[in-house]
Image 1 (tube, rainbow, N blue to C red):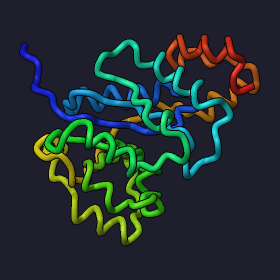
Image 2 (image 1 turned 90 degrees about the horizontal axis):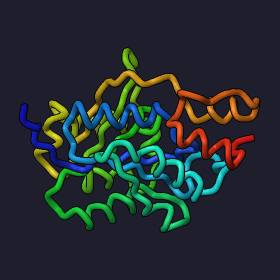
Image 3 (image 1 turned 30 degrees about the horizontal axis):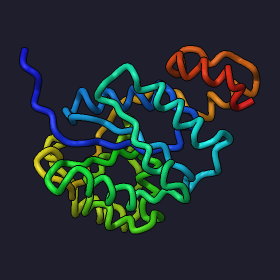
Image 4 (image 1 turned 180 degrees about the horizontal axis):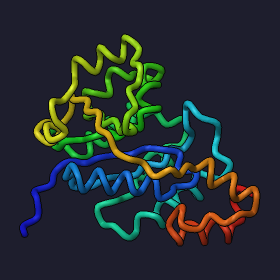
Length: 216
């Protein structure tokens, strides 16, 4: 059986505080199902819309690096941590676009919650110039899009996810994936209770959290 031709760079940003199997399972499913050549996880230095993480940016980065070591299609992109300051997606997309050239498909993966908050993002209508937007929805969830966002979807909606490989940017795609019921807040809460976090995240990450007594 020959390998399907893969192209395109998918990116998933996040606080990853800590990274867990839910994030990783989504990443691998997207790679398998939609055939992108690689998926980069981009830990943000300072989330613009969330509370500040309780562990250092370097520790969050360390954990992501440990987590992806088993699949060569997954990589870690350190640019937001290195840049410091608030992490604006627009700056990140511009800088990745410069690096990969004008023709390579670039796909920004967002969870539905992030997508619904898109109109509050800095320069949000510009994002589509640099990348496709791939929204991961939960099964059976029909969100109410505010008018700005539903207009945005109508203008840029892809007929099928495979169109994303035929153009460098400019399309919005909403796809349903079944997420694992794991969240970073659940893991932090278990750590505070001194309960086991086994099997929720990769073993090296679990060991790292215990060794450094994070989230207690």
